[in-house]
Length: 371
Image (spheres, rainbow, N blue to C red):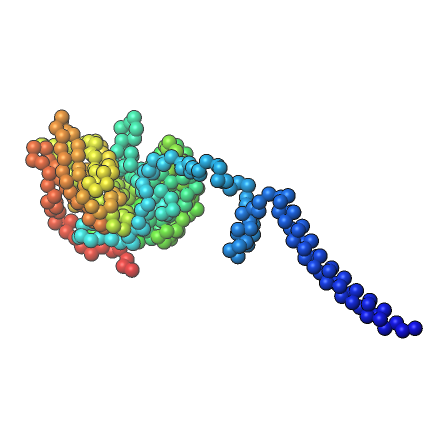
């Protein structure tokens, strides 16, 4: 039996079926795609993202949609400016750009904490509600802040009783340290006092270097809260020979110090007078009072009764009212220096520098170790 025609017929049939099958898959797939498009919503924006070759990500539900109201940002209400904003680094001691300046000490509190004098209670001011005069400056650092040696020297006092007698728990200084420094000024010894500490970690006779930790800020003794009381004493370790520390601590770089001598028409100091000092460029104003009448000492050269440190270099206006008369005077603070002025009732203001009252006060080489 001849089967060749049958094989040919089968082969032709298979080819026709194959062609029909391929054509049918293509048509069916296209139809299915159209049907799916008609049955489902429009493509999401994800397809548009894909069309520019960016990775496809679902849109977060928290993003605003076109129908949502526009974004509004609520910013915090600005807080009041701090008592002191950013400050430059300190000059390195010793610093003396004139023969009679003596910025010999570093700050006893590091720059990452408050390390400037409490404005309301400076040297020569009264303790609130009393006639007790302040013989140092207070630095309002938090409890536990390390207290640092302001200069190298030897610890000559460590403990309680600096004023009232050793080991007196009622001593106003509380736990205190005193350093006799390895350098002096014009041939005289210099001491620094660190008081009201909660803890002391040095002992009498111990040698310390500038920046060594002496203890930690506290509130022992007569205080209203944690702070460091700091004094500069000259020649003797005595409450009665202090000097204003703001004339001895190095200022921030580019900043200076104002010192004034305000006198009555009789030549006597005007006591406890409130003086305003205003920066003419920024309008910022400081207030400082002249010294109380006792227990404080002026600088041998400036014989001041007012000091205001940490003032950025620039032009300032000094203002006060005395006996019903308002006075004002413009001056300029110079970086790294003391700017001196004097006022005498009936004569007005002057910037003439004082002359040394005694020949022994002529400048001699300081014994501060040079770098």
